[in-house]
Amino acid sequence: MAKFSKKSLTPAVATAQAAAPGALGHLRAALGNPYISAGGAALLFLLTLTALVLIIGDPKAGAPLIRLPLAQAVVAAAPPGWREALTADGAGPGVVEEIFDLSETPLEDNPTLGEAVITLPGAQAARRVQPLPPAPIAGLHSPGPNGPLPVIAPSGRTPAQAYARPFQANGKPKVSLILGGLGLNSRATREAIETLPGEITLSFVPYAEGLQGWIDLAREHGHEVLLETPMEPVDYPENDPGPYTLLASSGPAETTRRLEWLLSRASGYFGLTNYLGSRFLNSDPAMVAFTGVLRTRGLAFIDDGQAAGRGLGVPRASAGRIVDEQLSGEAIDAELLALEAQALQNGQALGSGFAYPLTIAQVAQWAQSVESRGYQLAPASALTRR
Image 1 (cartoon, one colour):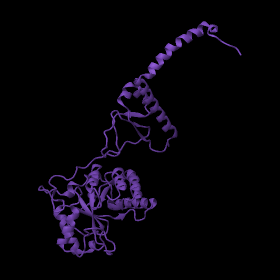
Image 2 (cartoon, helix red, strand yellow; image 1 turned 60 degrees about the vertical axis):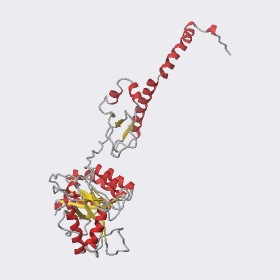
Image 3 (cartoon, helix red, strand yellow; image 1 turned 90 degrees about the vertical axis):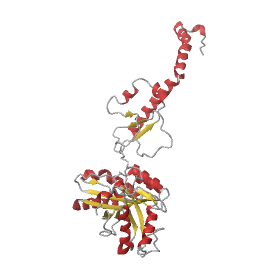
Image 4 (cartoon, one colour; image 1 turned 135 degrees about the vertical axis):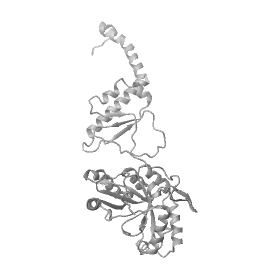
């Protein structure tokens, strides 16, 4: 085995060996600089993540939205031109300094300074939300024995007008949909509020915990709101809609007392809708007392189809179809298409459904394309008439 000693090294090798400690020192000093190392690491992470998504992502799926918190020190230390390099070819991922939130629910913590949003090629822009004015609106409520009650303002403006979602018809057939049963299941309620377009009207159960908070959140996302009113069905009390159910046998004073308790649960709704009520809705005295209260308080009434042609004298509408009587994706899609056909024939159509997760998902998908087929998605209030 050959042996080597320092004396046997060539002059060139010896010179390189002598110079190595100084070069290594400079390299260690450069890597030890926190700004350089952090900037390099951040850039490498961005490029690696982008490459992975482009390689393994589904080309037919909408491109995802990636939010990466970038500390100000990292941004300051990044190599010059790093932003330009990301968009140099006009097709690469873009970097913007503002944050687009699909949900406008307030965050628990303040966003990190310098947080960036990277939109990969093909990504759709976040849905723009047009919030409705917060409730209660001044002049439209007064104290009641159990809470604030809706009233008509001195100017004549009614809650039905003030709390409805603004709407401008464009001449196309109008299609409206109400989803009910909200407020009891927090996950389904939040999903309906945050994923459905503001033109979808939402109705809330009066017994829901935190009802005012849910209504406020719905209005922040552009949804007009109805309050569900429990009404006596033909098989009552075996089928009991809940406390303060409106009974067909009650006199006007008792109907008013129960109704005012329900109305005081929250504010911000433009009208009422029925929950059950097959007996109550078919009682003339009961409906006279009911609509009398609504007329006095300036509220609308929209039913699920059981009271078509009844309860006149207030802004009224009746749903023509229930879209999820059969709980399957195919059946719901078929009902939504039938609703479109009804709108094409009559100029407008109103449907109703329950906030099942499947119904929410199918309605969200339908709502994305209904206007491309020549219809105008409209809030339910736009279909009311006296």
